[in-house]
Image (cartoon, rainbow, N blue to C red; front, top):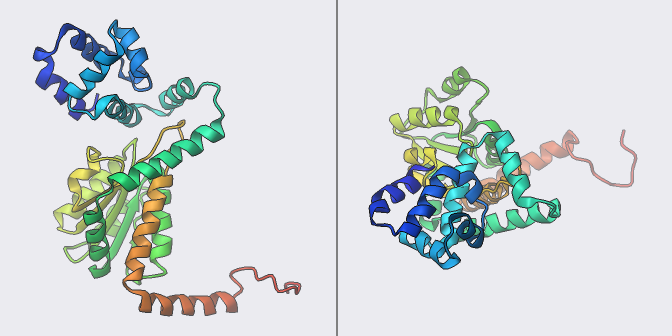
Length: 291
């Protein structure tokens, strides 16, 4: 169980009613099953009513049963290996249309991200990026794709971007060893969280660099190193990580940062367009056969 959930149970367990204690015991021993149960199903499993389950969630400080279920699902996503995640997703999705299930989940994650994101931290992140001497970007495992995407577009705007190679521990510190309080480090990490990213952020924080963490929740392991925490929700349809919401957040972050340096960005893009045209980087359908 996640520490925050366990703490809530520990703090109030002695005061719980018999019915609530049955629920608490069941959740602690069967959280992987309960994470995808409705309140009705959880009530049936613990021989209590649906309303008792809802009151239990509220007594723990959650925003009703959906809040409790969300905490349980985050525990599943952070603790399960790929095989367990696939089995859990299969039991939840069943025979449903996978296209509808996956796309609907992504839509919900984007909506949840929009509602929960700290606008203040977003604005301060933009400020930190535009005032940094160097912008270090890192993400390991599946989050490496997010780091690569962010670095590609930030390179069009800034001449001080460093994409940190996370293929090995040595490569990470080879890139990071010059980081200082004048720099910013943008890091991505989602369940299952990478120890490489944690170690890199500890290094960056010890050198007083501004750290922008883009992760799924305030309880994420990398949140402890954040100067500015940006949360982007992700879902678990199968063993594949859904990173649609983080990508949307990256788009917004780069667009906002570039908008504040629009004159320089226009110059950069014009120079690049000239180069791309000269070297035929992109296909142009002019009606003529290519040479």
